[in-house]
Image (cartoon, rainbow, N blue to C red):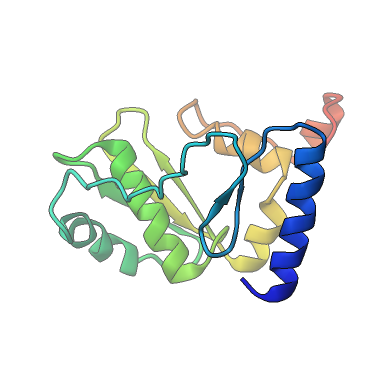
Length: 158
């Protein structure tokens, strides 16, 4: 700690002590000041993967590299957990195309993960769009056409 930091710390601790308060301050050098017992915050460790390094990437990337704008790829889940495949696909999609330029979902039968790459201009329009959210949930229902006009005609606000 430099001289100014040390001077301010001494003044603060003097004020807190004069008020008979218990406190704990950890300075920039890692030294603890005060009487209050605190538990050190442990740095979170990355969770160990249940699959060998590179195995998920080898399974997902051939499908991801072939996705063109405005198309969808179906990644088979196989012997993996569907949410693990979806999470890895989301991570790789963010690396490849940027955040918000894709959508992922697990199919109803949990046999495939769908990754849809969107045009960046359309993707920015669809963020926080209630119509897009409504339409994205209809994939497992019988196909029907819902437009903004129908949406607004039914009294729903957008």
